[in-house]
Image (cartoon, rainbow, N blue to C red; front, side, top):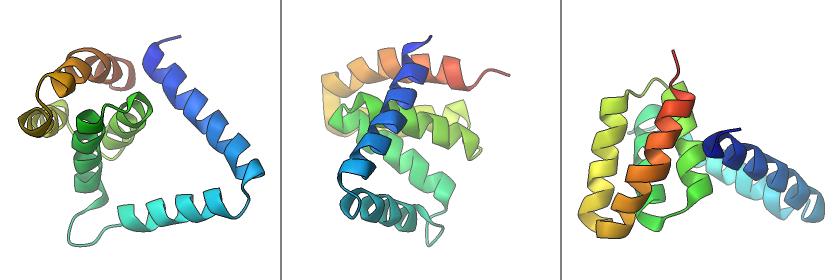
Length: 114
């Protein structure tokens, strides 16, 4: 199984375990994330591009994989995702470049199969 898909599956499984262990906290966090991601001045699609840039900047592998998958599902193109990655490079330098050149590219290959 590809690393990208495995990261997403492990994240979802872990969220389930945490939700059972923290039945008030985790559902509240998930609800908050859902509210923050809703269309507003920015669309959900645009917010997923922001999320990719932030994930790359913060070097969170699970976040990179989850948000790359969500961005593609929301209709973002590879070119848009690459531009978001470019903004992460502006602020995150070499570490963001490392994640972009490895995991982000793997995610695009894995989740953008036509």
